[in-house]
Each structure stands twice: as structure tokens, then as C-alpha cells.
Amino acid sequence: MTMHDTPTIALVGPGAIGTTVAAALHEAGRTPALFGRTAHDHLHLRFDGGEIRMPGPVRTNPADVETTFDLVFIAVKTTQVEAASKWLSALCSANTVVCVLQNGVQQKDQFAPYLSKDRVLPSVVWFPAQREVDGSVWLRATPRLTLPDTAVAQVVLTALRDTRCSVDVAKDFTSIAWRKLLQNAVAGLMVLTGRRAGMYSRSDIENLSLAYLTECLEVARAEGATLGNEVMREIIEGFQRAPIDLGTSILGDRQAGHPLEWDSRNGVIQRCARARGIATPVSDLIVPLLAAASDGPG
Image 1 (cartoon, helix red, strand yellow):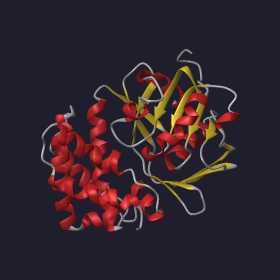
Image 2 (cartoon, rainbow, N blue to C red):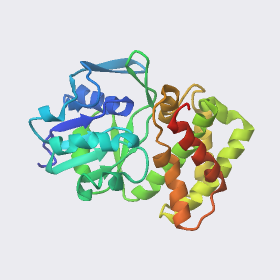
Image 3 (tube, rainbow, N blue to C red):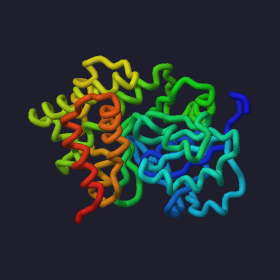
């Protein structure tokens, strides 16, 4: 495939993030094949000023897949990787690029049991999208992805060129991925309060967030991220500027009684800290509470 070709595209996991990317591709005339746990006859994306309705179906049986694809977007939660792995052998050839639209900084490691690491392309997702009760997805900001500056990133750049979902490539992807992880880590506080972004206007929550970010930032730097102290204030002010009803996917999962991505968003920071001998007293309190919340109501 040359950079001028349009790759054949599949998407696994048409939830909030997956629907956004699929709808952007469909709008540009590059409708991907859709696969997931639940059958749908269409996808519906809403945003300020319009909507996109994308025809399905969302197919649910890997045994029915008849061809492989040049590019596969994986948009399942980190808690669903093992269950989604059945799609990989069905959809992927030895040359397929798998772009992971997922939280965390360990996407390559998570998919290593199923794919060659050089075919796995991690990403950072920079937009809030949430599933509504009617099954539609509400996109609340301009969609953007960041990818590492590698050869296989070109396939995604080609697929998403001239769509409403922009793509950046970064030579220092590690720093960008850890910056987003810090943002996701602090968003985990919403689970413990049952509140949305409006809670960050409280001075006590702001102070707790700063204490948590201080230790998280030390871990990020130890893991190779180049991030200044100003990142902590930027993250908190971002929550404070957000609509007060803006939630996060981990809060949505908690309210729905689903398993939480606490390990990839919060636990990973604690683990990296322990491996490097860094004290994390705030993590040592927050992580067990998030883990317990993920276990269920009992």
C-alpha cells in the first residue's frame, strides 16, 4: 500500500470513542467494517451543529469474517482486551496495522500476547464522547488523536486525512501519553465522589488533585516523560473550565455497574512507582478504593 492508497479499515468496539472515529471515516466516504459484542443496525453520533448516522451492521461473530484488513482500530476498554482478542486473528494479516484507541501507556504490552509489537500503534485520544441513554454518542469537543512518529502511523494518517478527526504525530510520544495518563488518573476521583467536572471547583478537591498529580508527575518523569510542573495546574484548570456536567468514561462505567479501567488509568502509576522505589501515599489510598469500586456492589 502506498501513502496515496486508501486502506481497508475495520473497527472493533463501536462505543463512544469508536463511534466517533467510525463516523468521521464514514462522513469522508471511508466507511469501516464494524465489529463488537452487541449487534447494531446503525451508529449515531451527535455534536454541536449536526449529527452523523452511519449504517451498520455491527457484526458479532468472528467466524463470519471473510477477509483481513489493512488497518484495524481497537476501541474497547482495557478490561475487554482478552475478550476482543478473538477478533484479531479474524481481521488481521501479518501486515495489518492495529491502532489502539485506549487509555493508558501500555497498549503494546497489553496486545503483545496476540500481535507482533511492531504492528501495534498506540494512540492518545483527546476528545470527550459519551454514550447517551438512547444509544447515540454525544461528542463534546473536536476529535483529535496523537500517534507516535513511526512508519506504521502513516496508515492511520492516510485513513483519517481530511476527516473531522485530526491526527498529530509526536516524536516524544512518551511525554504526551503520560500527560494524558495524569489527566485520566485525576479524573478517577469522580468515581470516588460520584461527581462530575464541577467538583474540581472545590478548593479541597483542587488540593487533593495537586497532591496526587505531584506524585504521579514524579513517576512519569522516572518513566522517561519530559513534563514540567506547569502540567499539574494545566490539568486541574482544564477540569475547572469544563462544563460542570462533563463526566469521564470510568465514571460512566461505575454508574452502569461495569468493571473499571482503574488499573490502566491509576494502578499502572502505582506499579511503576513501586518498581522504582518512589513513595506514592495518595495512590496507595486511591487505587484500592477504585479497585474495590470495580468489584461491584457487594
